[in-house]
Amino acid sequence: MKKMIYYEDLSVGQKIEIGPISISEKEIIEFAKKFDPQPFHIDKEKAKDSLFGGLCASGWHTCSLYMRMLYDGLLIDLASLGSPGMNQIRWLKPLFPNETIKGELEIISKTPSKSKPNIGSMIIDSKVFNSNNELIMTLQSISIVRRKN
Image (cartoon, one colour):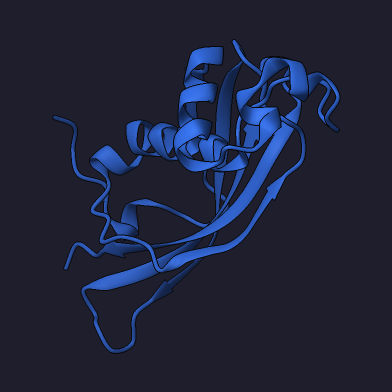
């Protein structure tokens, strides 16, 4: 087990790389059938005539893959207390079968809690890139992290 990472251990401007993780056609279809059954996520033939030109992952599936990379790359060792949510999510390009994605996080602000001195919040900008290093998703999240003292 690595050393626990606390609020004070991270700084504004710090960048953290996460991933990679890959996705298969089968995973795209299984996720979409259960959670986002639009034709371009579950039917290869119908997807050819879509705006995307082929079968692609649901944006929510892309977010789930991002969350897995975030956990493996940071949260597993972070004194995280959760998140009140996202400020924004943008899906810029589709994620296609058999692609591998990676991410880059940047801490853009930190605010110690005034009412709870043992915690602080951070705003994190994230970018997700596909196999061709093209930006496919951006998001901004808020994290609540335990302080050392």
